[in-house]
Length: 233
Length: 220
Image (cartoon, rainbow over all chains, first blue to last red; front, side, top):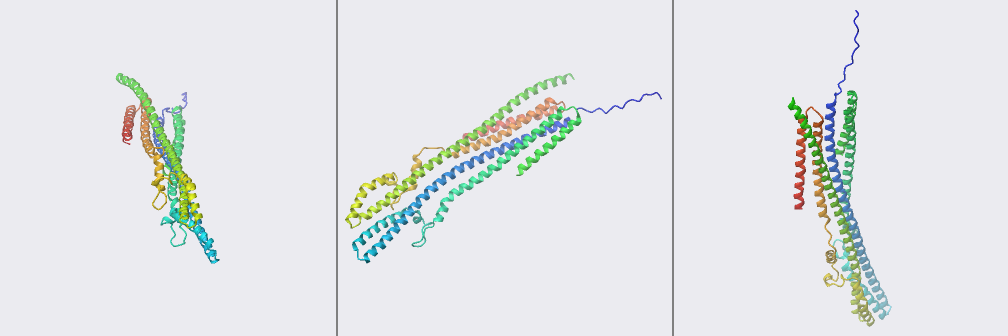
């Protein structure tokens, strides 16, 4: 009955416990980081190309705007000049008729000549004007007005086409740039996972190792979520 | 047992040398990938500069064309007026026509030159050939490279960069496996084989991509 009672020895913790799990997770994180780096690089390249295309089209649009401005200015000047000459010829002709009726033959003849001069100017001006030489815009009936609206639509058609391409390229740029940024976010989050797994490898307590490993897994899952959302987006 | 120790100690040295080699190769691959990416960006920039130059030249050509067109139109209309005055029976009108033709018309024509002076631009109906004049302005101007050529080259380099990134990643992965083989004791042989195989595959990939794009750039 004199026997001594031995104190209970606590179970010895294995210091190497969970190390294999940490290594496997680190490998997985490395592979994931590599894939993410490739995706980020690809998205970045696509964004660069789209950005360049959008700038190229913007240059073309500005040039086309310049050209359209010059052409319309010229065409409407010719058209206005033609109308002025035509109206002057008509007014001179009416004046000459009034003068003839009043018996002032000499003045009427001089006014007739003025009318002939204006008519000659108008006749040539008509040949210069796209509003009378192009069947698409020429008046359909005698004395009618040319289709200036259709002319402006046609003139701006090329510019609008380039502008549409420019807008599309700008949208593509925005999309890929956003994706590239998201991949950088996912990579940054993965760096946190690397840090946590590194800590897990360094600590001596198996429980602490498991804790760090668990947080690392949560971080990887979050990074995967960001990656998939970016891929699908 | 002795043999195994000998193998283990030699393996660690050999693997360390291989890790150093792979590190250098990976660094070189990353550097090369960045150089290619930088060249692609440079080509894009050159293309954009050419596009700006081309557009500036076109803008100037159009401005000159319509300046000449405006003066030429005024000249042509004044000439029509003179012809009408010359046909008049009035002596005063004829005299006015003579003076305009002698003093005013030549100066108006000079303002619109060469569109108004060169007969090749004059059409049968008395108007002027603006398309021909614009074409001549373009041909006479400074020859600026087509931006499309630079953009195509940039796209090729971007594509090469994309494939080289994959190669760099393979090399980085091999580095990881080899380091793992150096550090751990279990499954060391498998890790080493995986690392070495990935490295060789990565190298073959890298060299293959360089060779293919070298041929493509020569053909371009």
